[in-house]
Image (cartoon, rainbow, N blue to C red):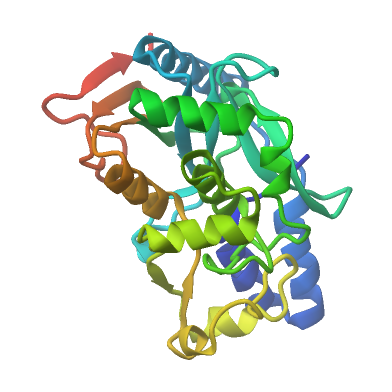
Length: 301
């Protein structure tokens, strides 16, 4: 498995297509999604493992059975985004406690699959091994239990899985699907009883789920025609003319969770070469991994 997720990989692949030309750009785009894992030094791996252990400890102490977890990938600051990929961490995951259940694109099978990944692997899946950001949303007991039941059910996660993957899947369509779209549809199943994707989308719309439009620019809209695993056929013409795409991203999912479950708690954690920062609450971290008053600081020894 060597998946690359959602809009982060889409943007990089699109720029490669523009730089390299149509045919070679498409090949490069394929490599962006299905290339080999990034090399990680022993020191970087050690820090990531220690960070994952802190995350797991927070989950254990939370009393939750499920948590919506998101990680940062490529630098999306120019689009006002930090997080690109989300899944659900499950205390009773059969893979291992708190493994993340998520959608990924299986390159060998050429189709999306559901995959359970340990927290350490989830953390190391980020682009920059030397640093990382991760967010957790912990739900009130009733919503927490419902999400855990749906996510661990033998049929539900697969019933919501599309046959075709698109990194930039339109948030309100069932033609394609990306990792974040599968997750938010799983929430619709857990809380609204949706048994399939059309019903899940209807439930989300009825409750005001909103994927904010991302201004991707004219060149990226054009490049999307040439990059593998990226599509524009599901996006409304008016969005494309406006050079925007509405794609399910972790930020939108977190805001939806906050509206649907006002008692939900959020934790944001980051690490760099020297320390880990833990922030409790909905105020997002700023650039880098700097602690502010009220944050917890864990220094690497």
